[in-house]
Image 1 (cartoon, rainbow, N blue to C red):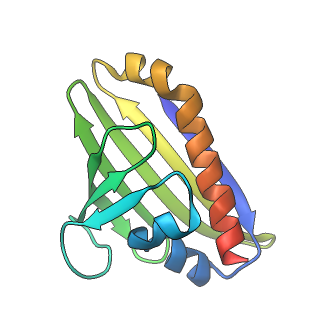
Image 2 (cartoon, rainbow, N blue to C red):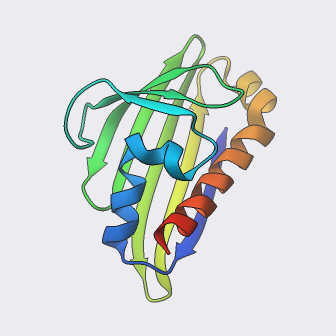
Image 3 (cartoon, one colour):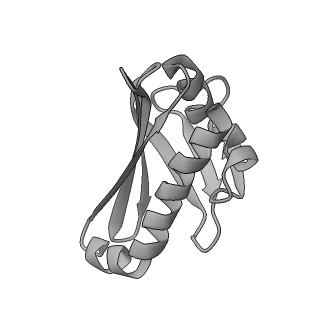
Length: 137
């Protein structure tokens, strides 16, 4: 199952990336994240691991599996029967900077998890991109 949400932000791509990729500060600007604990040091990078607590969801550890500084990072969290991939993209356009959040659930139980959490998941990624816009502008 796949969920996407994009928003156009009237701020530089650098500003949007600075906030979007600074995962430790997410609880400061989005209510969808209660706490973040980086399990390694330094800026976000390929292989970085982060423990994320979100309302109404189990605690998850996410590992960065793709990283293009200033543009995109993708991280993966695994649970029995389901692998969840979260994508975070920043693109400069003539109308502003477009930020996109994507969540993909795969695995033998992904259909069940997707159905149980579809409304919550879509609400969370929509809230995250809209709150990102507010934080950047």
